[in-house]
Image (cartoon, rainbow, N blue to C red):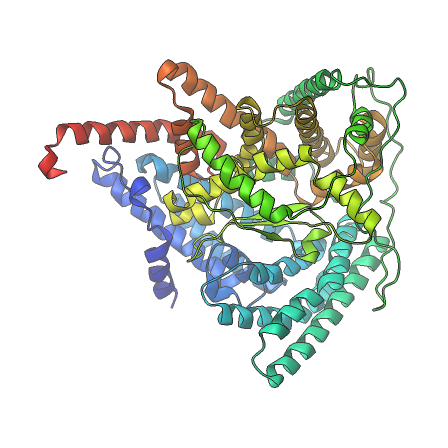
Length: 637
């Protein structure tokens, strides 16, 4: 059975497009061909493990046969998966990397890191220590609600099956969680709370799709049991959040370094990294101060508090209550050495309050879709981007995600047979006051410009849609997040230099975005290397850097849930910026920005350290194809 599964996977997994599959220079000797084939076989075995043990992950890499299941969350399953991973790792060690083609060397590095990261996770006793492992099951439901997969009827059936499996996840959480941190438990509690509040949108969707009264009755019963399971998980996480104050959510230097290296391919010693991120923050502060000088700042700054859409508190009609919890007791924040920053968040809040007000409601999905299409054409005519037929699909965000994000980009699920990029937008809701607050915060023209540039054009949406037909299946399924995150920052700065982000106010919001990213990156490092406790980090954000408490707490939650993510934005942006500077200097007047962007996008989300070698190979391949075309008689072309 395993051999058959691997054989089937091999047909789809490494069937790369012609633009990426053939490099005549790399295939001059048989060793490269044999070694490439050995790597392909190893990768197929790895993918088979995802299908066998981790159906939620298998869905996200495009294997729809796993869509009817949720992950088993228990020690026995982890032990089985770990043994299987060890076998694949031993097979990978037999592949001689030096004999691989240039592109397969990159794939080798990505597979090696994924194996290491998977084994690390399985060895970390996460079933007992990480409540977020269980709340991730909520996302698995929305994976099937949002995406348009091959057969909608089968997708509906699979979604119903995952709903039926949700009580098993609740039982596993009750049985296994013994040593979770209070802070991670609080994060999981919030996710369960919002999943409970928004669960009816899933049930109503399935009821609308039901074919007869029997299936509608079954759907109602399954939905009721699933909702009870979510309530059970909420109660568990709430109790654990209050009972385990001594458990530390911070990774520590060793584990944090491991995550940075194997998930984000950021491999630098902490001392020079901290020095670099501190310098980056200082530069961001300087730029923010410069843009603030364009506005007549009053002598006294007022604090601006941005309220959340909905804060847990009141008991609902269904009996779910969320009480915001204080973090575990910690030493008082240490006094910072040196003077306070010359500029901080409080000064930006004061200016933003003055220049953003009374934004009018409109059909934002339609207007942003139209603007994205027009901007793509403009940047193609401007020779910033290659000409392409990228289509933009924007839709309203489901209620569950709307509690956490103003927007969410969902690229295709790896080898999804009908690839579709989805951009989900949170639309204003609630009473009139709440709607206006959301309009002023999320839909002011300055934030919309950053949203358009970073997320849509030339942002991550455009990049993903352009590269999709050009990538091997491996790169579609097992991408590294660093370059995608860095591209968001890079795209905003490209939009700035090409005249899309141009006014003083827009420049201010761009400087603010860079400042927030710089603060988050340094926070991420200091928090997970245990230089700061939660209380010290919160004080550093609010007292020294002027952030309001709500935004500071959000930044801490993101760092706890996704260690290393904030740092990846900085290193991904630097990799792209430095690569471009190199080729601009190297090619001089022959440098084409559109061609450069086309080549970078066609590589996919590879490790930043492999970017330069792959770009050299891309230019070399282009030159060899051109030479071959010019030297071949027209009647043989």
